[in-house]
Length: 77
Image (tube, rainbow, N blue to C red; front, side, top):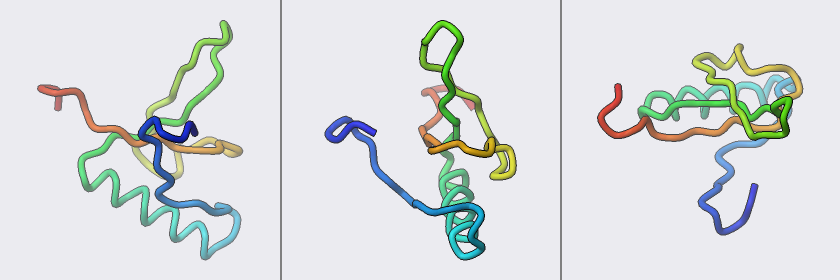
């Protein structure tokens, strides 16, 4: 995350710890209920930044260090 570039931490925790997992799942669902989209950053083969869209908490790959939430593009739904 880059301070000053609009990044904000919404929730942190270890998904292997039950209490943390509940909090992470709750925040994930809350963001989706607000109409946000979710993506997990991945390293592309060419070094380009890429991301994989996720719609369920269970789709987040093991070891992912963050999920990015963003609004859908204007006019798209």
